[in-house]
Length: 255
Ligand SMILES: [Ca+2]
Image (cartoon, rainbow, N blue to C red):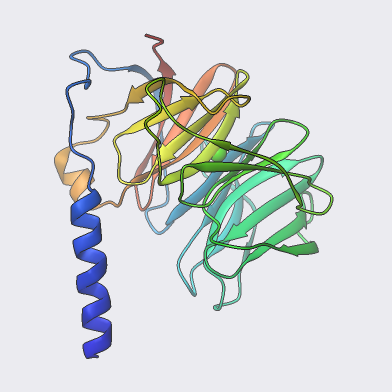
């Protein structure tokens, strides 16, 4: 128990130290316009979030509660779900060529499922942690909590190339979390930050930053965990967070 307490204390201290503070570049006007709001299951510890056509695919985390779910965003109709065995903490998901890829946090395993029947087709092992994953239509792009993003071959999960994410002043952005590929850019949640970053997939340079503050009431925020989950469809971004009660359809404003 003492060990558990010390671990908890350590996590709390780390979380406290890295908690994102509003900085000078927080805009006076919101970086978004809310187009619509949809319900989100508050039992979902969101780790992966992506559309496949009109169907939303979500991956959730925590040992014993990690799932992969396909559902309708408008009425939450469930189109199928599977649960991971209790030894796996689910992380990011992405859909490419009829397959769903699902990372795990510290289990060094990426599961591959058939999109339609959700049967497991394969699994790959990798080094390090798994956080977020998306794809550019050809390759998988993965984050591991650092400032690096790894382009991987979907056929064998081998690393094809790596980019370091940084701003134009060469300051690195670490703790990159859930990912989305849209409009030729990579969009990333940053763990515990209230913004998402837009990244050039060739250079790793952050080309824009969107503060998504004040989406929910203080009561809703206090009952939720961090923002995590970006999906894209028809020019709009759909964002949510861990245990959030809502999914927000947004139009992001370029600066
Ligand atoms: Ca995503």
